Image (cartoon, rainbow, N blue to C red; front, side, top):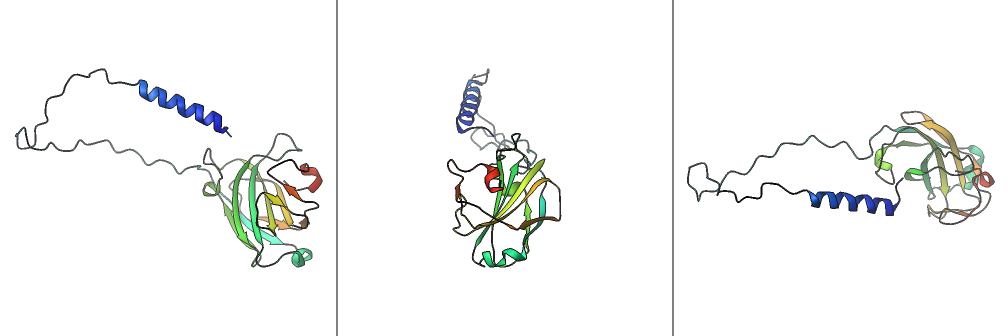
Length: 194
C-alpha cells in the first residue's frame, strides 16, 4: 500500500509531466464557420470520442458467508453491540497483522449475520479485492474500531480466497486483554486475534 508521501510524489510527477506537454502548433486558428456558411454563426460543438466506461474502483470478487455466535458466548453479547468484520491480506511475517483491506459494520441484534465483502468495502481503493485474506469478526462493546477490550467476543478464519461463498466466521473466543490498534500493543499471539 503506498504511503501518503509516495502518493504525493507520484501525483507531483504526473502534474509536472502534464504541464510539460504543449501543442507544437500554436499558430492562430481561423474563426469557425457556422453550418449556414455565415462566419458569425455559432459553430457546432466539437464531437469528442466516447470513452469506454471505467471499471469499478477496486475491482475483484467477493467473499460471502455468515457470522455465527457460539452458544457458550451468548451471555457475552448484547443486541446493541457493534460487530466489525475485517479482511486483511495474509502477512509475510506470521507474528504480524496483514494489511487492512476491507471493513464492514453490523449490530449484534440477531445471529447469524449474513455478509458479503467486496471492493465497495475496501478502506482504500488502490487495488483489486482479490487473492487470499484472513477474516476476523469482533463484537465491540465500546463501538470504537481502534480498541479491543478485554471480554470482547471474536472469531477468525485464517485463510479464505476471494470468490469463496458460505464462509462461516464463528464468534467463539474472548479478548484476553485491552489492546489499541492505534499504538503499541500485545503481539498477535498474545490474544490470538488478527
